[in-house]
Amino acid sequence: MENSQDEKDNVGQLDNEKKDSMIDQISCNEKLIILIGTAHVSRQSAKLVEETILEQTPDTVCVELCQTRLTSLKDNDKWRNMDIVKIIKEKKALLLFINLLLASFQKKMADKFGIKPGQEMINAIKAAEEINADIIPSDREIQTTLSRVWRGMGLWEKLKLMFSLIFSFGASDEIEEEDIEKMKQEDILQTLLADVKKTHPIIEKSLINERDQFLAEKIRTAPGKKIVAVVGAAHAPGIKRYLSNNEKIDLDELNTIPPSGKAGKTLKWAIPLAILSLFVAGFLMEGKNTGTDMIWIWVAANGTFAGIGAILALAHPLTILSSILAAPLTSLNPMIAAGWVSGLVEAFLRKPKVKDLEAIPNDIGSIKGFWRNNVTRILLVVVFTNLGSTIGTFTAFPLIAKLLN
Image (cartoon, rainbow, N blue to C red; front, side, top):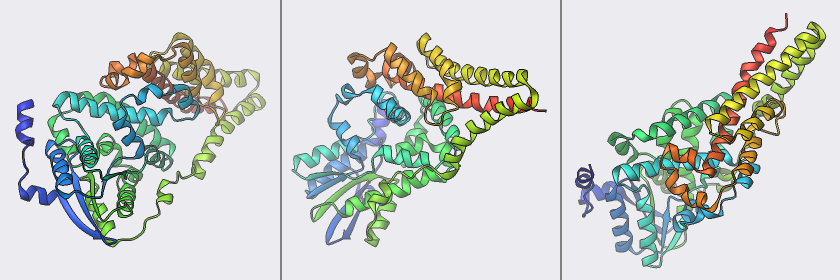
């Protein structure tokens, strides 16, 4: 397999026709912009990026990385500084979990095919440093992109997205060569969300269209007269179109996290109020026994499914107990989630050690590693407990309503 891949990529010189198909030269704002549309998992692309920068000696090199990812590439010890408790309290556990899924997806490809995704960006940075060119991280922060996707989806869509991510996490162990070929034309995040993307236009809009605009504006306003921009092939056509039009794009608008929709806010409060109303109606209309039965159904459904979620995450027994006790109460309080409670309990009971933080890059390379590492297990506890509590809520609601004659 390794030799076969080497023959396909052939690290040597690319033919002129292939180079021409990957490089565009655009005049914009009295600047020469050399746009390289790369394949994220191709040795040829990595080689072409390095050769082009060293030959063209630009003033600036723009890379399809946000500041966070650029820092991560340069700082291999970034995991040492992670504060998992702070992440849970700031409600960022899900975003971190998705980021780790992406990193896991990339690592699996690297291990299986001997290809390092993003090598073209690493080469671009090294070549830029060699010629003393400015390096501009030109992509939007991944947290912002994911947040805009999340806020643009309804509750049912969010649930389907979460299940799709979890299933793709398990399926990523079976990456085949055709998946590699697909990724040569797609953004890695696109590939991971490929199945969900078909039915949710917001994903395509936020992952590609908005980032095309963001990248184009950062490249257009980059310092220097000659700029080399290294971007994924999926973004190159859109960026070229926006640069050719030379229209100013509002980055503040693209960086804004939209507020929760009115429907989402209404539903967040409507469900607890509806449940409480059913309790009251049960006691007033059907009597004490029916009202009590309603409460027990609610407690059992929420507690059971939240507990199952914690068990699936291999949580500490006391964490499982906390999820069972917390879920019936947190489901009636839109400001608190059961997963946050169980996640904090798990973090207290199995406090991550330095070795856990240092092992994250290796542990995310396998499903077992996610459950073995104390940090990633805490994230699993948060995500799975929240999913369980949500399932419990939608299971209990019709059962309670049936008790009203």
